[in-house]
Image 1 (cartoon, rainbow, N blue to C red):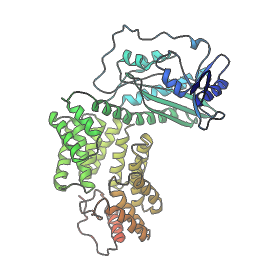
Image 2: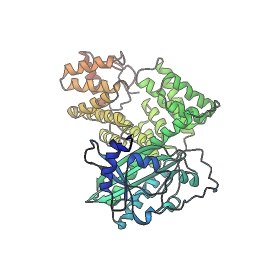
Image 3: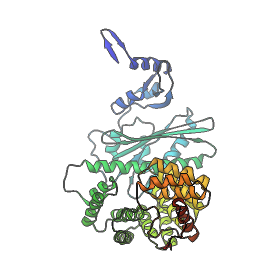
Image 4: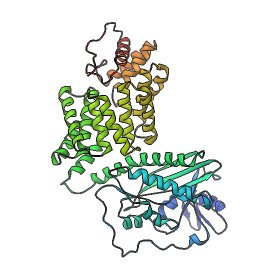
Length: 486
């Protein structure tokens, strides 16, 4: 907004004029920018009207409405200023508040409440997360919400709030994650779907929300640890620091320091096993045999103290299966992890790998798809290449190529295996020029086009398809020796 004498003009004035036209008589409409500035200072309820296209404004404006009538009266604060705040748990903690019913139909309150109940249930399955029970969080129903007050009353770091809009056979759910202490918005998303079956949709939305919130919370905890002023870090601090880094030798040393401080720290042991496995399977380890034994040792130690931690079970089983451990036994461990937390995206990703190695390509595709749906940002590249690999081993080469290319272009310098499978795929299709071009890109990552270490694929026909495709891509006619399974 620009002020010159008695004149005020600019985009802010234009937006305000358009929002005035959207407001009911006597009512108020504000933009998202204004809502974000005042939401924690004024005890009013804000109803999300979605994006609105308004005259003379190029981009849609996100509009929020303050309902007229009784809701304009200041609501009493739930927690009094003199109330003693509850202590914050020593692990990530969250309260899920009642979602606003934006359908314009009071009879649809049950639907919004059902959304929240399913989300709380799903989040409660995450063992490292402290979740306030529904009976407590629903005491805020119908009241103006102040995230800072909620955090103080319940003793939690995070608050999840949202809204539900239902109509015309469709439903839209919005959700946002707030850090209670500062009021900062950490994550927000919108979910749309058909209303063919209310209860099935509740399950799907809850799974999606929980799957996306988990890495968001983990990232927030990592950032919180990184900015603590103390130099005397605990094993947990070191683990979070390592978790935020790429698996470089420096990051590995940080992780080893965490393990040295606490030799029974299961998540750190499992992460160390996973990192050591990656160094071997990607061909980056200077001493593959040493890193292989290191991965196996860390994984077995992790399983010894895993308890019911889904992440530890999945990561440790993943590493052991990669190095030849009984595939059925390791799959059972991953299935156990998913039984503890069905919304665990990385667990589905590990399950897809194990199914791929076991030769169960259809299940590999299905489980990679679930991982992608639960974590569309973190798992996109991995899920794409897993689905592409499963399609390759199913000899569905034309379907595999676009999946593999998406994975490579999304993360071109991540690891070499997608390049190898894409090159083999092109070669079996007779597209030798494309195969050679893919090999050229592969050589930028590693000089080892055909891997010399034992592959985890249990099906001999799958191993031969892989090796023969790479030999064709290189123009080699002789059969590579030493291709037995580990």
